[in-house]
Image (cartoon, rainbow, N blue to C red; front, side):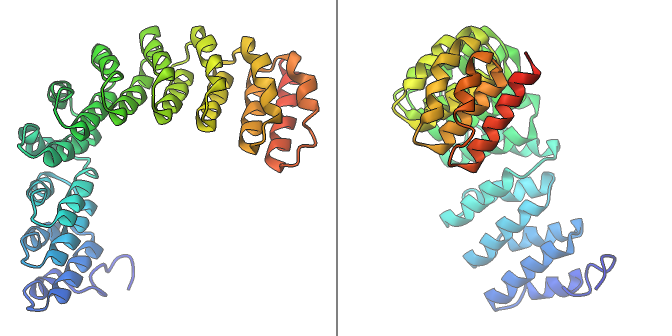
Length: 321
């Protein structure tokens, strides 16, 4: 078979269509796989047919297969599969919906943002996030008040992807949501807004009760780029979780926060090689000559990645001073 003969090994569409009518579910499932291999848009009507197969394994394979295609008709079938009696089929449909990229598919999705099922609502907003259509913004903001946390998480994703400055108050409010996953998603979403209000919301989250949220907050401050918050960030170098301390080190480097140099230097002796490496990288980004001696003392670190980063950092200090 060559690249120009796509049906030679898998059978043409008429032959595959016949196999979809086989009494054997395994034959029908393999026919669905072959439909994907054709890479032909003409396979979509056959997949639509397979989506209502009485066998759950065939429906599951079909839901997965539809993720390789796009458009209004695909969205319509996948939306129907979200309420399949088999949870695994419904989840596969949700995953495939998230692969859609054709904006026209939003016409199928938007009417379902208030569906009675929280699973469906979350899946719809997850799919709308990738489509990035302006019409989804209003429903997403309303959904920040949804009673289900999974829906609120996906609604935050829609808002974050659209990157509209006027949505900042809604995102900032979501950083105080009762659910940690929502707070985490909201802080992540704020990263597009390089202003003080967004950075301050991230800084406030450095004291969140969940370490995962604190880690994302530390990272977000570095992305937002507000050097005014370097002091708050530096204080989090004392966090109980190394994952948070790591994100703090990385963000202090991105901010080139010279006042933090004295607080970063001790991490060159941290028991964790990853923290020693990130401390050296941060000091290289900042390039303050005051760190030269401390870095030189780590030039023979037992970890090769740390040694390489130390050498790079020393080079940065020499080049920029």
